[in-house]
Amino acid sequence: MIGIDLSGKTALVMGVTNSYSLGWAIGEKLLQAGAKCMFSYQGERLQASLEKLVSPYEGTLTEQCDVTQEADLERLFARIKEEYGSLDYIVHAVAYAPRASMEGRFVETTQEDWNTALSVSAYSLVSVSRHAEPLLNDGASIVTLTYYASQKVVPKYNVMGVAKAALEASTRYLAYELGAKNVRVNAISAGPMRTVAAKSIPGFSGMLSKAAEMAAMKRNATAEEVGKLGLFLLSDLASGITGETTYVDAGYNIMGMNLEG
Ligand code: NAP
Image 1 (cartoon, rainbow, N blue to C red):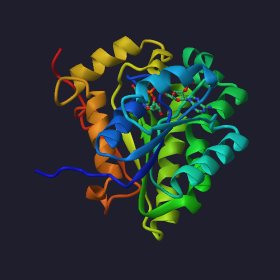
Image 2: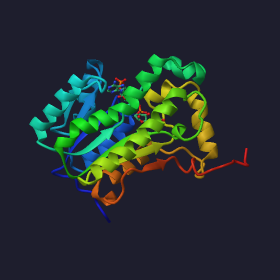
Image 3: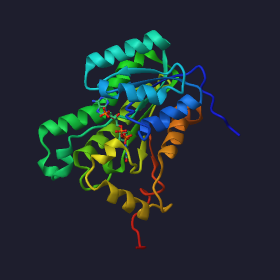
Image 4: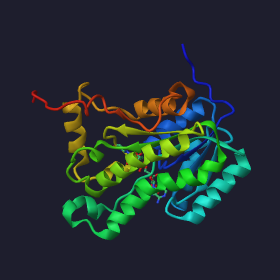
């Protein structure tokens, strides 16, 4: 049996709102494997509940950081330097698009909503990587979360599909630039899962049942499965894998047609 022991490793996990968050699914696996973790949250509103969530794991740190604010990123990475000295893992589980941009037609996306969605959901991976670079250890690894609507049209996903396409391309460019330093960057493409962010997608419940019907495994993937893939990609078990988008969707994306039902 291969156990993953990450004791002595340090991690930053960005984008945990509650125990359903995909960032938590990966972050909790890191904690269970023995890594020291700092969790960043967007606004003070989340501080108390996040602190409660991490409280069983002694020594776990929290820090406020809105990824669109350079000053927040500077403060976050200064704190990481002070607390840990260096960093082994980053989980980027942050995304946002204004609800109106997902309710209307894609052709009506405003420039403001486009900029917001792309800035929070894609550019932030670039700026986080830039701030982190001086602290990253040899063998460090970054993981982000994406969705299939980057590749194919998923009605209502709209500008978020474009943001995820930019995120996946950014993953490849970052993997190229950081590769020579033995730092890996990968994206996990998760099937639909019930989280706070998912609730803002119009018709999300229908998406869940349709995805399960179509999937090779006839079910939805789970957050637990995202956590396991995240742990694998971050750890040395995936030492030769970088720039990839790996699906954990119970085999939805491999299907071209569903002849049943
Ligand atoms: P979630 O629990 O709501 O997590 C999204 C996180 O992004 C929240 O903690 C949110 O903070 C944070 N965030 C938004 N704007 C931010 C900003 N400006 N600065 C810092 N943090 C910000 O939902 P989730 O589904 O786990 O989402 C995590 C990732 O998985 C996202 O990239 C999402 O697109 C991706 N994903 C989700 C699914 C799914 O079906 N759930 C499928 C594929 C991929 P607040 O709560 O404060 O807004």
